[in-house]
Image 1 (cartoon, rainbow, N blue to C red):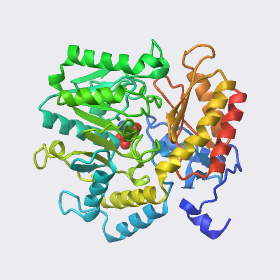
Image 2: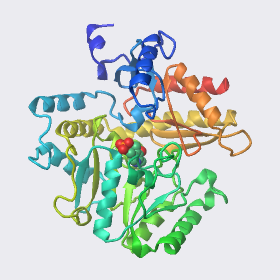
Image 3: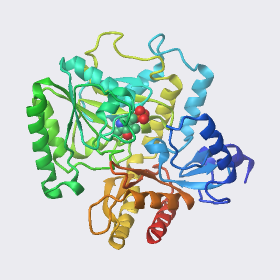
Image 4: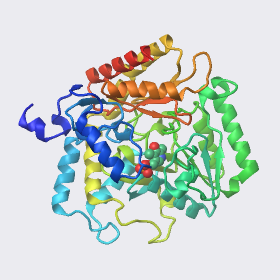
Length: 452
Ligand SMILES: *Cc1c(COP(=O)(O)O)cnc(C)c1O
C-alpha cells in the first residue's frame, strides 16, 4: 500500500473488499472493551468494528479489513466519505475561522447554503431557511414555525414515522422500543394517523392509498379538527419505519387536504433527501410541494448540519430571536454542505441513485422469487429494502433479519436493519459506490440468504 493511501481516506482509498482478520478483528475487540467501559450502554453498535478510514464505497477498519459500505453512516455520506470538495472547502474554512455564531456576526456560507436550499427544494415560490445541527432539531423548529404561523397547536404524524430522539421528536416518532421506551412523559398535542403501507394494508395494496387517506382525513376531523391542526409531518419515503413507500396517491391527497384547511405540510426528507431516492427530494416523485421541508443527513457529507426550508411567509412568522442556536449553521459544516451540493451536481448523483436501483432491485427481486422469507422488495433509487417474514405468512421475522445482517457483517458487508418490527434489511450505499462493489455486496447477501 502506498504512503498516500496509508495516510488518507476519501477518494484515494482502494475500492475493494479485503478481510485480513475475523470480523471483528483483535484491535476492534480491544477498542470495544474500552467503549463498553467508557461509553454509555444506551449508544448501540450495529457492527463492533472500529473505523480507521473511509471513502467511495468502502470503510477500512483498525485491523486493516476493508468493508463494503451499504449504510453510508445511515444515509449521510451519499457523496462518499471525505469527498474531495467537502474536504477542500471545510479544511479551508477551518483555517479561516471555526465559529463566530451566525446570530452574532454572520458569514457568507450560511447564506449561500440557504440560497442553494431555496433553489434545490421543490416549488418555485419564495423560500427561506434556518440552519441547525441535527435532524431532530430541524423537525422541532419546523413544528415551532408551523405553530407560530397558524396559531394552532395540533401536529399530525403517522404510524411507522420517525422524527428523532429529543422530547418533542420522540413524541412525533411512532415506535416505542427503542426510541421512546422509559423516556416519557412526551409532549402533548401530537396525533398519530394510519400510514398507507401497501404491503400490510388489510384490503390489499390496490385500495391502500384511497382508504388510508380517507381514514386520515376522517380521524383528523373527528379527533383533532382541521381548524386546530398546525401541521402534518410526514416522511415521503419512511426511513426507520422500514423504507415504506406510501401508496401512490396518498401524499397528493394529504397535500390537497392540508392546503384546503390551512395546515402546514412538512415533508421530513432528512433520510430521503439529497438525491438518495433518485431525485433531489423524494416528494418530487408525485409532484408534492411541501410548505416546509426538513433536511439533514445527506446535506453536508457527514458534518453536522440540518435545515428547515419553506415558504417565506411561513418561515418569517416567528419574532426576531425566536429561532436559532449557538452552533446552527456552523461555518465548517456550511462549507462542507456547499462542497457536497457541488459534488451532487457535478456527478449527477440523482442519476447515480437511479442507476443503483437498476442494479440492486432486479437482483433483490430474483432473490425474493427463490427465498420465501422475503415478503416484500421496495424503495426507490439508493434507498431500497427487503422485508423478511415467516415463509407463507406476513408475520415479521426479526430473527432471520438479524441472522442475515450478522452473516453479511462477518463477510465484510455493512448493512443496517430497520422497521417497526425489526424485520427490514435496508440498503443505503454511498451514491458514488462502484458497480463492482455493489454487485459483490449483493453476492454476499445472496450467499447469506441461501445459508439462512
Ligand atoms: C435521522 C432522522 C431524523 C433525526 O435526525 P438526527 O440528525 O438523528 O437528529 C429525523 N427524521 C428522519 C426521517 C430521519 O431519518
